[in-house]
Length: 164
Image (cartoon, rainbow, N blue to C red; front, top):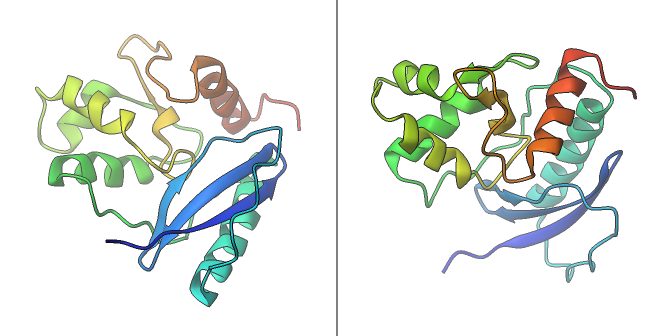
C-alpha cells in the first residue's frame, strides 16, 4: 500500500490540503476558509520541500503571476488515456483556454470528447493541473469540481481582470 503524507498549505485564497507520496503530489483540495485539522507530522524532507515550493507557487498564482507549477506529480492510478489528458492539460499556458474537443484532437483521439471530460473530472490536483482552462466548444464554463463560480474566478484571475 502506498503511504501518503498530508500537509496544510496556507495560501492567499485559503487553506489547501495536499497529499503527497514518495513520487510527488497525489492530491490537492480546493481552497477552504477554515483551516482543516493539522495532520500528524509524518512528512519527509522531500515532502517538506515540495510543500513549501507549492505554497510559494500557489501564492504567486493567486497574486496573478504567470506560474508553471514545478512540484512533481504522482501520476499513478490514472489510465494511460487519463494521464495523457491530464499531462496535456498541465501544459495549457496560463491565461489560455482550450475546448474539450480540441484537447481530444490534440491527444490524437478526436472522438473522445466525453472521455476527456471524464478524465478531467477525476483530476486529483486542480490548479496545478489547470482543468479550469478547458471549456465547452461554445465558450461555456462547464464541468469543474470546484464549481462554475470558482472556474470563472480562476479564468478572470488569469486574464488580469480579477482584483488582487
